[in-house]
Image 1 (cartoon, helix red, strand yellow):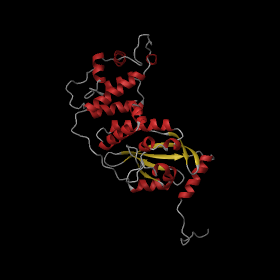
Image 2 (cartoon, helix red, strand yellow):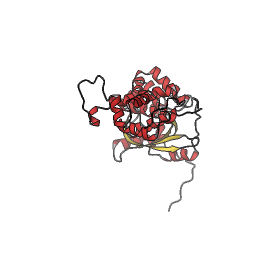
Image 3 (tube, rainbow, N blue to C red):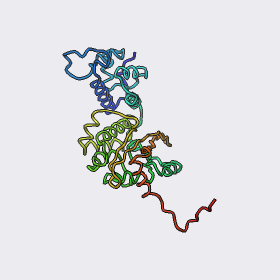
Length: 309
């Protein structure tokens, strides 16, 4: 296999550190017995040694050492696949590694402020039509860029938080880490916080030149020790879905399942459409119905009624 190029011009210092920290963190988390190696008594650090990963990936130790130092520009997909298999990376981690490699290739792109993409009207109409399901569109920085009335009612504490920007866009990461009330609102706060950081980490790999995203990460790292610790773990998640439990201040605890769907938009933007649903016949469904009744538009008394059949 080829070795990482000594003359790659695409490996920026920032990118190299992200590659290094990610690979080191994955190697440290991989117990020897998981790959059929003896644990041994003389291991001074947890996880695998570099030479063990190199052997599993069928490359030289020198080659893998350079790769782990961040020299990934020009490395073929076959080699990245071999390293991913050696480290037992899951689908999210593998995608993230490939995104880091793409960002390390020679490029004239510089850090820039990504322009917000307008949500097409038909998408807003679709979201608004879901009257019994909280639904919203979320961008890669975890801003809610579009949502229906039930979403705003369900997430009222986040929309009303001081962490919401001047444009009225609630941001999950800012609310989680900069508003103390989030710990009461989210029943499973730590699990949700870790997932939030992992989604942001994946977006940073996909869009390494997004200046606003870097500013967001810098802000959270400065102001929140919890975020700083979780960011340093280098966990990644491409898609976040499952169970959401909220302590709503008006209706009580609501448990819902949620699903995330890719929503391709112009200018290479990819947002997520998130839809929440409660299990039929449960108290959570009743509480969502109550919220929905509060947000339903009132019919005017002067509005014509349908004729009887």
